[in-house]
View 1 (cartoon, rainbow, N blue to C red):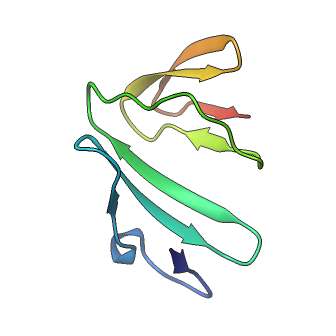
View 2 (cartoon, rainbow, N blue to C red):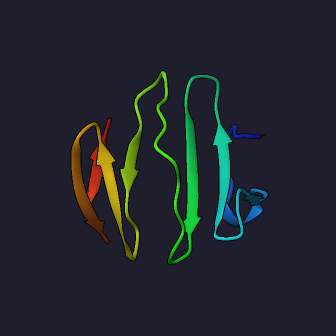
Length: 82
């Protein structure tokens, strides 16, 4: 995982292939982390949880997203937190 101090670029962070349709780039500081996820059409990620808060910001496209029992279709510009 890349540790960021100072300035950087998303393109310089190595992409990690999760599945044939999902890749991610992770950068972390001492107390926080940001994950850029690229999800292709038709991909599925299993329900999961984190011990920390998660903020989702849809840059483009749309996807079904669930927080607990609440389901929404997120589209470009939408945000969600859990």
